[in-house]
Amino acid sequence: MAYSATITEGQKTVADGSVHQTYQIDEREIDPANTAHQWALPVPDRCTSTLFVSDLLAGAAATIQNEIGVVSEWTSEGVGHVDKIDAAGVNVRVPQRKFIDTRGGGVLYGRSNPDINTGSAAGVHVRTFITLISGHVS
Figure 1 (spheres, rainbow, N blue to C red):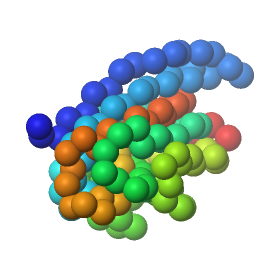
Figure 2 (figure 1 turned 120 degrees about the horizontal axis):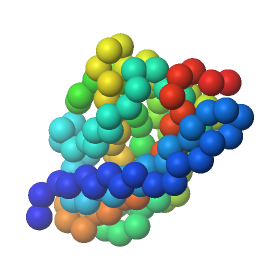
Figure 3 (figure 1 turned 60 degrees about the vertical axis):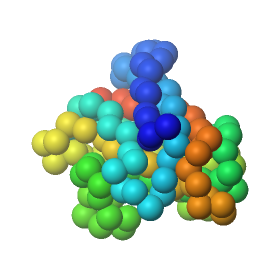
Figure 4 (figure 1 turned 90 degrees about the vertical axis):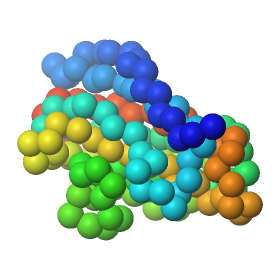
């Protein structure tokens, strides 16, 4: 199989006058050496991430270390970089809000960066949940 990313629009809630939209992203057959193995989510140019959590569900990977960016195939810590999970794990989470500015691109990208000890992406499955609010909201 080849890399795939399926994005499902989830729960939409209103809190404090803001709409919180949750997305579920399932990635399969992820090769961390291939920067094109990323998901792409259309978002408002300026938004706030309030939840970013991922789980390694299957495969030969020992851990994942997710990151998000606003430029396709961005370089970690480069100009298109938004955030990266501090410590790799099987279940990872960014606990704080992140302000995102796509600089007119309107797309948020993400990748899971599995640590594949066997060198094979076969069977790797990562599920990510991300909740976004339109605008920069503290």
